[in-house]
Length: 253
Image 1 (cartoon, rainbow, N blue to C red):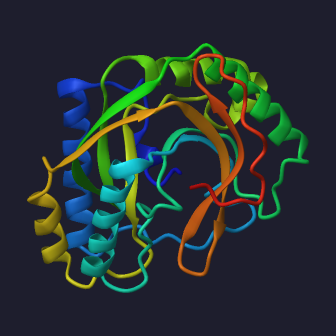
Image 2: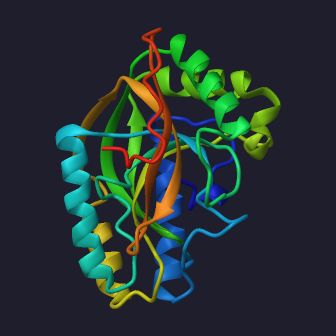
């Protein structure tokens, strides 16, 4: 999902430029948290954030590790925040497609077209690999920093944009310039801003592992009483493997 869209302008990059972008986000997030000016998210509503998106979903030991860090962050930040690094919420957004629609399902014509576009883009794509290296503050939460190990992720994102055509209008004006998974979305006051800033500062280079992904998902989000969680609409495997059956109504992983 898309809590830091104002930072996502231009082609995603890697290496030192990628790190510089995360450093800038940390500076902005530190200032916002310290001054009590951080963004506080609200439950998904019609026409708001948390709409249908194409995403990559980590699993296995790396996902376990991210969930553990998210739980620690939620305890540190205080009550009311969303540990979106949890197993049923974690994801790396490839592209947001529209605003939130509460009753979205596979019967929707846009979902069907986007699922087909996802399948076509994935068929010509390669397995995606990331090194998850450190966490950073942003004005809206805490994210795990993802560094692509090759150009497969960017290539897939470009393919998807082409396949979506006019249905990709929502993010047609820019390309995202970083890959990340948000572990904590701020949704309340931070209990101890100085402690949170220090905790993140000490973990800017924390090794979270390497994740390899064989496919992508078309998903939306539902509020489960605690936070938004993923609801899969379709999946597609990279490299021409047949598309998985619809998972409408099933929380992924």
